[in-house]
Image (cartoon, rainbow, N blue to C red; front, side, top):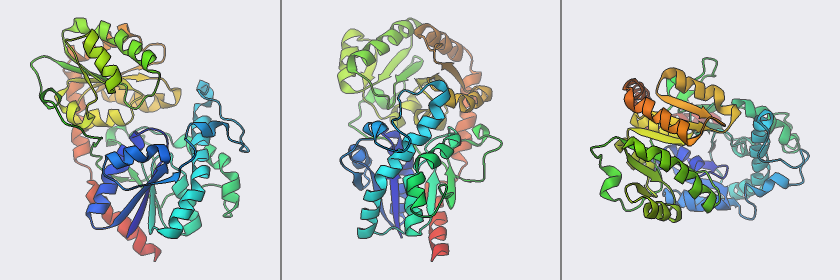
Length: 382
């Protein structure tokens, strides 16, 4: 069986999300390729998967201004336009990716194609090739309301294959802990997601738990100017240091070196979160996606700094479940973050509830189990 995975978007998280299933498929003896924009190739390589750059001359960012029927996509979108922007932007990525995917398929024809939450290119490719299409959720956040906007963006490409909307996947794989899954969510095969990141030579503090409460601050895959990011992190550190915690800042090396110089009592470095998170008592991060999944998997409470209205409903489920505190845009000041940390550290209930999510995740089918479901789809198609 030949399985083509697509790593859509600009975030390395889209690679880390599908890596466990792709690895399981390969370990079962099947052939795999992971396609993506050229800018994603280093990340695909870094987790030991074979990449093909199907869009070598464009970036996922500069397609905002392409000459498309929908016109220029304005970023950042207004709160009311977040979902239309998201669906249109990922739809546009699918349109740009299609030619390269078809060329790849002429040389290496897949038996089945697998994409993530907002990857619409594999759905289009499935319609062209007549092969099954699988959608695997990138994380636990419900963004299904964006799909209709992708349909609108892709009308020229859909018309070319006689469709009005993107075909539904033959199999939907969800990795959301069951208690955080919306009651009206459609049927899906639930899968245990296993964290995996780029790796590096580890230092003892990265995998060893100290005597003090450990708090990790990470920006995840957020991108910004170095000076702006550095100043942003310094504001948080100044408020968190008085809590007398073992503070870890996960950041790229250029920023981490400056932080270590300014604050010699903290740990600051680029560190694989799958290694670090089990040693922590609390994770502070943005928007709740894959870093949130890593925290849930390890049974750790979270403070989530949310900058998107479209994520509010999903994030409210985490708050109601009791394992995290969400601070929305405007509330996410360093002072409020410090207060949220104090609340979680002083109340063991947050950690107890986080462990419930970890147990839910551990009870789900492993990626290796899902390989059989892909094999069945291919067999049914022949």
